[in-house]
Length: 265
Ligand code: SF4
Ligand code: SF4
Image (cartoon, rainbow, N blue to C red; front, top):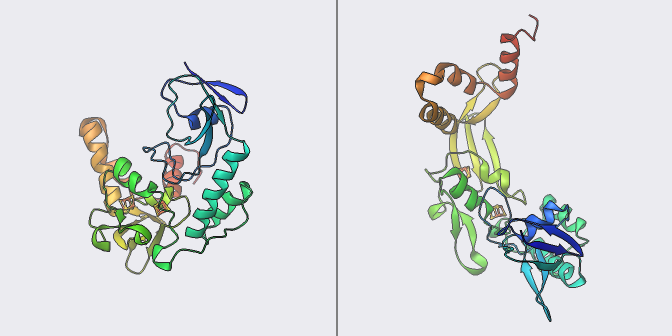
């Protein structure tokens, strides 16, 4: 197992682990935005830069995708590494100036505002980290969104910038967006869920008992299909599973508690 020496601390990791893995194992904080353990790393935001000791010179590398194959020495809190990360944060702040999440991270890094002009309205407060695109493709398996346009016009969008039939309204992209750009909007009159800014809409499933919104109907149907495929009718009481899917978590818990006698009528 190779050893990563970070700011003088030795951390042993599996061969192929990243510098970021080593830092996290030792509780050393490196800021990240485009990194998520559930998807591939492409280091697009550059916020996790550290200095790698090359002997007679040091190189800035992105820690989230730098594989450790032998013993290496890294500096996370050197002046140059911190300056590099702060510079990146200033650029990102210009892209998403209203993001509370980004402002909080900038403050933690000691960055006060940005000297750069803000990007245009059409770029919609997006830092182009691509996390939503990777989650939609690699975890959900839909590939309903992707990068579109070039240069300053580059955005994340559904094909032809129209609502996509491939979107199942699962909301995973909104959950991982590190700057809060993607929102789940409920249209209660139409009983629909919308993934904004992609404009995709899906029918909304509401709780049979209390009427609380749960999830898009497509997602609930997929959940039933998957359970059926994985376990088969013989091993699973699908009727009961279908009933439970149509309840919100609170009503589901209350129903289970009643069944097992922990709630007195
Ligand atoms: S809500 Fe739509 S775009 Fe977002 S991850 Fe799910 S399928 Fe993809
Ligand atoms: S919408 Fe959010 S997750 Fe997607 S690229 Fe932009 S900042 Fe990243």
